[in-house]
Image (cartoon, rainbow, N blue to C red; front, side, top):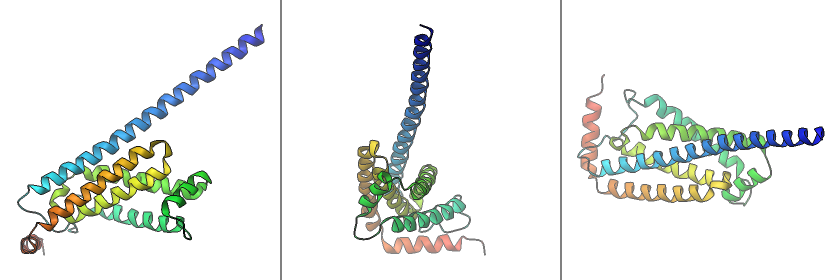
Length: 204
């Protein structure tokens, strides 16, 4: 009888621990997906602001740009991201197939590093989404393309949320096309003039 009670107690304790873990893990996933959506809608807002803005800055490469240091960091991380994807994609297989193999074949070292890089890039994307990137359309374009590719990678890595990330990838693709359309309608003379004014305003 005592053994039965102990067994029942242990099973109950295990169940409680499992549900606590599930609750924490589920909450973390919900928060992450929510953050991904906020990031996307922030960039969508930036595209709208750009569409109705009367002037733009051609470059964010000025060291006095408020987020200049973070810009350098995300560019360096993006290089790591691209190089890592090149290493993962071997032979004639598609990148999607290579990423799926990485997950299901449990290539831990490479997978963990890719997860770390994409996680760091995602955090940067969220931070940048809260800056006024619409005045830096060239950098905004870089960010949108990066976000689309990160969504693609996450679609392959997080099978449980693949539909979510696939939709996000499609939405970023749409944002990129919308941005291209806006930039095509910005007169080249206007951009050059603004660039000159911007450079003349820099400290010597």
